[in-house]
Structure formats: structure tokens, C-alpha cells
Amino acid sequence: MALDKKEALKKFFGYDSFREHQAEIIDTVLADNDCFVLMPTGGGKSICFQIPAILRDGLTVVISPLIALMKDQVEALLGNGVSAAYLNSTLSSAEQDRIMWRAKTGDLKLLYIAPERLFSGNTFEFLKEWNVGLFAIDESHCISSWGHDFRPEYRQLSSLKIRFPQVPVIALTATADRVTRRDILKQLRIETAQTFLTSFDRPNLSLNVLPGRKRIQQIQDFISRRQNQAGIIYCLSRKSTETVAASLKKAGLKAEHYHAGLPAEQRSRVQEAFLRDDLQVIVATIAFGMGIDKSNVRWVIHYNLPSNVESFYQEIGRAGRDGLAADTVLFYSYMDIMTRQDMINNSDQSEEQKELLHAKLNRMKQYAETDICRRRVLLNYFNDAFDKDCGNCDVCKNPRSRFDATVIAQKALSGIARTDQKVAMGMLIDILRGSKNRNVLQHGYERLPTFGVGGELKGEEWTEYIGQLLNSGAMDIAYDEAHAFKLNAVSRQILKGERKVELVKFIPLNERKAKEEEL
Ligand code: ADP
Ligand code: ZN
Image 1 (cartoon, rainbow, N blue to C red):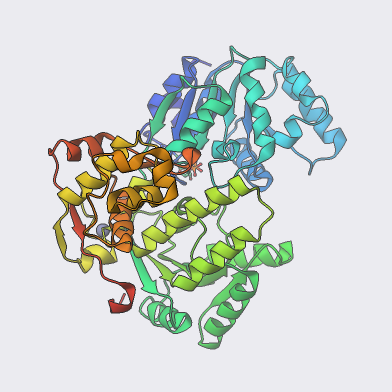
Image 2: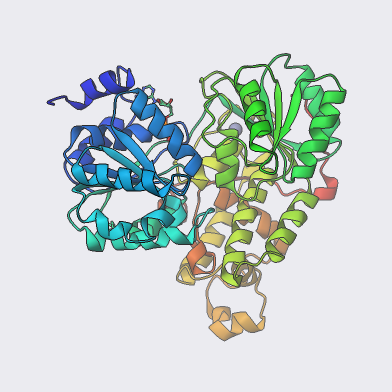
């Protein structure tokens, strides 16, 4: 079968052209090089390993944590004439034996397998006999405890490169910040992997934050301006999906709730009604949406604050897949933060893990509270260089007034530089304001030339401005080093006076008049 990649795309998937990066990724894998792919949900990651699997000799083993999605992917492949199967606990042992046999005889091009299944029994030993030509690690952020969905069973994948040094690995994810990315490569032992980062920008999604008051009323007003436009409302608890759906139904809307506690039959009924456009609104927990391919979702509302930016971006990303304009709304109040903080504190995670979850929550808070373009905050979070205002978020539409804060930025950044990029927010502010507390004295920071240079600003002003600097990409933060600030290329330009910085003037929250815009 001497097909080339373009012919394979047409023959097996019916598409005429590759999307951004797909062709280069396929070439990299076909040349036996490891590669790392960061592409938003719906971006087209599957083809990046499916086409190499079809074109090359041997078996491609796809590691995926989502048993429900495996079946869909395999069925889609079989429907397209590609020999594929999956191995997981839903199959009888006779069926599993048969699939392992087919893997061994070379009858399969792709085998999907969950990591816990791969490392149970002696499956991993069998791999040696299977002529494996490629490992594809889907949802690869699950291997990193810096990611937002760490799964301990993924850690065992570290042994793949040791056992199969000659087999290329392609790791894929839709969600990883820079620290997580580095960790994924380290854990998989593919540090030299070629990395492909696809822009996360979804310019057709409007970004809006509304004050978290009278939420139901605001939602009804919002939907009343969107007759027949399908949307999803994400809630934190199962209970609130039920109460919100009930009140929308009472107002005459075609709405249903959806969560993992419902019987499978009811879940699929709701899901199908939504796909068929028989249902306008789904009120759901985050259990809804994985693998849902509905291109005309026109809006997504977050009734409650998500726990981190990755989840938030994935969830709003379910709107406007067709590329047409779609709106996203986040309801936000200080209480939402408290609720989330309590959830973290009361969870049975390790202290280290809790700290990470708090840091991630804090970035979500910064998105909600930002006074700079929200898209800049989001894209800078994913380290997508984006240095203009988007014009399609509520902040851009109602600009806040700015002032030249280059000197403020230089003070903060030189504080970071003078302390060898080892300090986090609290210590940096103490240094800038000249607080001679024990911690500061212990490190001898009171002798730094930057000590006390920022005494003219209050602590909360510094917190705000440093938050804005972080949000606008003027520096980075390292979760794995106690949230120490790190200088980047932008920081250095600012320090050298090659770049001006404008920040939004600090206004205490109680003086801020919530401006409810009609959306
Ligand atoms: P991801 O895994 O990144 O979320 P998928 O691989 O499921 O995304 O792809 C999302 C959708 O885009 C699928 O319907 C897929 O068939 C489609 N797709 C992928 N690549 C192309 C392409 N080159 N041209 C057109 N559609 C594509
Ligand atoms: Zn904007």
C-alpha cells in the first residue's frame, strides 16, 4: 500500500487538506522521531497518529484514559476501513484474548488501551511480541501532577522508552501550561521530542464575566435573546444542575439536566436530544461534553467558577466549533472562590497537591478579575504569545483606563532578578515595600538595592499590579518552585527599557460599580 499521507487523508477520512501542523506532525512520526502535540480540543489530534498508524508497518498502541471514547474512536476507524480494536475491562476475557491474538499476528493497525489495562496482568510483556511501531499517548497531561487531571496509573508509562527505546512516541494533549509540558516530556523520557504548539486562540468566542448575582434571572434574559440557539450551562454540583434546569423549564425553555449520577439511559437520551436540536439547553456538570461533537453550540455559561483555566478553556471550547460567533459567560462572585478553596482544603489530596490546586484556582480568579483583555489572560496562560487586545471580550468592549506603569513593572521585575528568580508574590511585595520581617531578614534581602523601592504603593496595589503583569505575560510563574516568578523575554525587554507597560489603575472592590452590560 503505497499511499502518501494526503491520499490516506482523503481515502480514510474524506478530507482534502490538512489543518495547521497535522502534515508536519505526521512526517515527524513517520521519520521515527518522538513528538509532542499541544492542540485544542477539536483541533484534529487523532489524525496525527491515525494516519502514521495506517501508513507505517507494525501496530500503533494508543494509550487513552477514557474508555467511553475508545469505543467511539474505534468504531469510527472501522467505519472508515481501518483495522482497529480496543482493550479494556468492558470486554469479556475471551474477547480480550482474541484481540491480543490479532495484535500478535499483525492483523491490527491500531490498538486502544487504557493504562491500567496495559500494566495489569502480563499485557506489557506481550507488547514485546507485537511488533509495535508507534506509541500514541493521548491526554498525555494525565502523566503530570502539575497538570489538572493527574492519573497515577499514567506514571507507569515512563517505562515505555526504557523498554522500547527504538519505538517513537507521540504525546498529545489539549491542555498543558509550560510547566506541565516540560514535565510530560520528562516523565515520558522524550525530552528531545519535537514540539508542535497550535494556537489556542478561538477568536469567534466572545469572553464575558458577569457578577454572580441573580444568576437565573440573568440566564433567562440571556437565553431570551437567543431563540433556538443551543447552549450549555455548567454547574458545580449535580443538585444545582437539577434546580437550574427546573427553573428554566418552568420559564418555558427546552432544558434538561445532565450529570454522572443519572442512569446511562437517561444520559444518552438527553445527549441525543441535544445533538438533534430537540433540546435547547443542557444544564450539566463537567461530566458533559467529553467527546461530544456538536458544532453549533452557540453559547456556554459557567454558573460557577471552574477549578482551573485548563478546564474552563476546554469547556467554553465546546461552543462555536463551526467557527461562527458564539458567546461565553462566566458568573463570578467572591463566594465562588471561597467554595472552591474549601473544596481543595477539605479534599484528601497531599499538601503539595493542594498548593498546586490553589495556585491553579488563583489563575482562574485572575481571569475573572482581570482588567486587561481576557483573551490575553487566557492565551498567555497557555503561553501563546498574544500581545494585542482582542476586541471580543467584555473588557475590550468597555475599556478600563490605563496609565504608564513601566517603572512599576521595572521595580517588580528587578526585584525578581535581584533575588535570582526565587521569590513568590508575598516575599516580592515585602521586598518592594521594604518590610523588614523575619523571612526577609533571614535571606538578607534588606540589603538588596530594590529593597523598599516600591514603598509608595500599598500591598494590595502591588498584588493587583503584579497580577496584571503576570496576566499580560510580563513574567512567568513556576508551580514546581513554590510559585517563584521567572523572567522571560518580555521581562528582559521591559527591564532594558525597550518596552513600555500600561496597567489598569487599581480600584478597591467596594468602589467598583458592577456594570451589567446587556449581552
Ligand atoms: P481532538 O482529538 O483534537 O479533540 P479530533 O481528532 O477528534 O480532535 O478532530 C476533531 C474533528 O475535526 C473531527 O471531526 C475530525 O474528523 C475533524 N478533522 C480532523 N482533521 C481534519 C482535517 N484535516 N480536515 C477536516 N476535518 C478534520
Ligand atoms: Zn479582549
